[in-house]
Image (tube, rainbow, N blue to C red; front, side):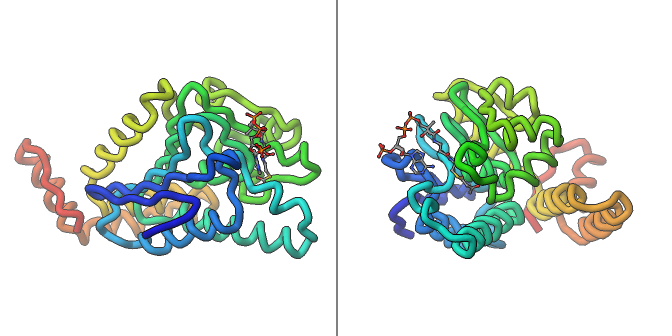
Length: 259
Ligand code: CAA
């Protein structure tokens, strides 16, 4: 697949989307959003894709929505822009495969909101996180007010959403926004290491695990527990459950077939 604003690759089960608009600090314009959505649609439920890594370059992850494109929007245009971002990031969040954001540099506005839709965030020391929308006279419109609050709590989320604070990678790690903090030059290697570990997990159980955590985060406990019950039961319909438990009893490593 050839794109103008992203580079897409798939190798050994690991798909990679590299945002590639260096002149605009990787800002997400509509064309870039459409390209990301096209990839996500194409790989959804593709068993060949075991993990997706989203990254920028060594200088920036994504500096947000493209302000030059948004500046003249009217409320209807802003609504459509917001709807597009919500749709894409929900698809990303719901992808069957785990998604890792591999981050260096500014991760702002829509860039942070995209990273928040991923399952894991690995940041280099240059990672800089913020939702600067308030400084532009608007509010985050790609899920930031909701996903950030669920992840780090309302009090800390308001520091970014209302004060427009930008936090460094160390603070983001302390807040639980970043899973792993490493040197910039190690970010991709660590993302690949995590991807390799995830590739070795039984794919169906991994998908169920992701679904349960994501579903439960937006539900009351009883509804979440019912969902967990359904996925726990369904896991016993897989060959990997039989193999995983047999291997444990026989004191050997399981050989999962992802079915
Ligand atoms: N949209 C469009 N262009 C952007 C951009 C953005 N979000 N962010 C940076 N750029 C452009 C700059 O306009 C500049 O272009 P020129 O070279 O043509 O002048 C170029 O990238 C480099 O930017 P700076 O000169 O500012 O470089 P810097 O190194 O001093 O700072 C930065 C880099 C920290 C990323 C800084 O540009 C910045 O703070 N950007 C913030 C952008 C922002 O406010 N993002 C939120 C957007 S709104 C949003 O995301 C809404 C939503 O919820 C979906």
